[in-house]
Length: 157
Image: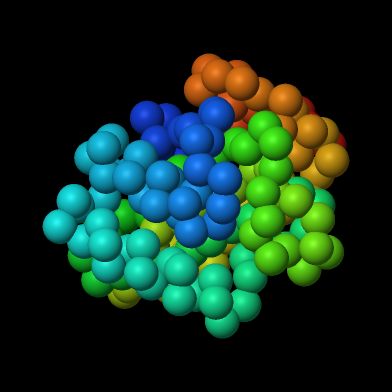
């Protein structure tokens, strides 16, 4: 599985407007709804579930990145939005450091294996210094798509 298989190009937000965790979650869910990747009718439910998930335990796993995620019965296929905060924001990350790159993943309820596989792909790339650095430096959707393409082609370390 490659990042470009589930990251929705039109749901990439290279310069997030929100300055806090919940605002970023709303902004990225809205980008998935606007791109047609998630139904507008479940927008509020998705936001509520994602924020509840964060309250149980932060998905900000350190190194400046976070991966909020949720399974939902009305999501048909795995989709993700990517957001970049140039200033960084408090995501209650495990290392207490600001978060700059956020990958928000929505998964079908009935395909837990696919979600686990997507999470592996996301985490394996987010562990790479070059991937995180290039993602953080990206200021346009096209630059982020280039980073994803390089990651999928295994050109980043």
